[in-house]
Image (cartoon, rainbow, N blue to C red; front, top):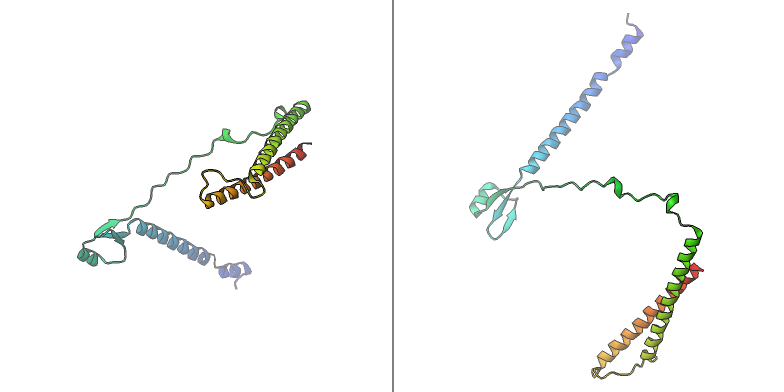
Length: 177
């Protein structure tokens, strides 16, 4: 008579489970190794007329006067590792600015923006005066009408760009107040 433990142990296919997986692993390893070796030693042919091919047989290559060449793996150089000291410093209590200094910086920024706004507005006034509502005066070197049209289009583009600069400066000034 057989006891329950022996009967249960005989039904567990533990030896069969590990064996196919180890065979599979061995087969996969062999496939990878042969693939790598095949890739390292693949042959191509350099034929007259600077033609490169790997689709002909050695006999055809010899008949055409081709030279057998062997591919080589490209040289790879690993990237340098990041230095530990290059990391961004974390803000600490010593890097914070006190309120007085921040107010001074803000007032300086406001002054600079106001100066830029005044300069941009004067530039816009000069451009609009020269543009003359789309009818700028012709210059002496503009005997060709196309040159005149090109200058007019350029003036219009400069006016548009200056207007967008003024609106951007105005937005920045509104943020600082």
